[in-house]
Image (cartoon, rainbow, N blue to C red; front, side, top):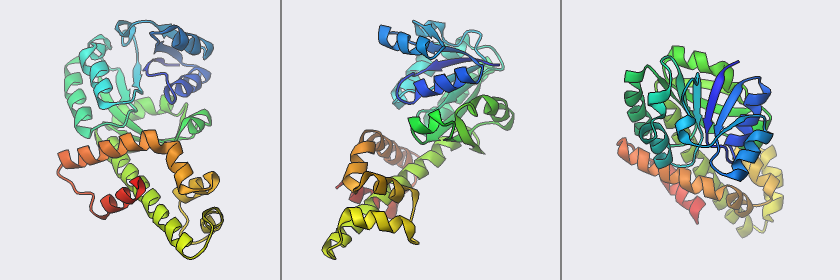
Length: 265
């Protein structure tokens, strides 16, 4: 059993809390409002009313908030690193800039805290099934230490390199994901030109050689537009992170950028 502190008990974070509790871990969760406190307590975790209660005595702190700025506030401004015991680990699930991960890792060094970026691929239903894909960036020993806990909701848990590499793999994943939606939108348009109904097209194509996971998701929704609506809020945010991070790191999305623009139309 591990003592796990969690910041971010929303759409993704709360199912993680539930799986951690079910796995026998002692889970403390930042919950500032009555509604969130009730949800945390119903999940069997301990509600912490202020961020000052996060970090102390924790073996692992999990951050699952929405934006880069929120991660910076939690990890760098709110004193969480300072309160964590030496040898503990900070795991960041939020999709953010790899540079932010690297900054936090440097800030954590004097406190003897390992920083691991554990970017995710999947949704709440994957967490509930214990099948969330995790891309981990961090030192070998630190990743090995946290993996048994993360397996409460993650499978596969993939170590992809040093701190920041989990985010880099996720950025490539998200760029390709958005580009695939764009390409499939163009495919739907081609089908319309040929007189093929979109729902019929995407009920058939998943059985062909062009099949991909995104296509299967679109087939379940019935159209590209319905799927785009379902994932739009998170994908729009993640595409913005991709473009900013690639530019910051001196990269180029190339032809993926053209396909991503097709997704946005």
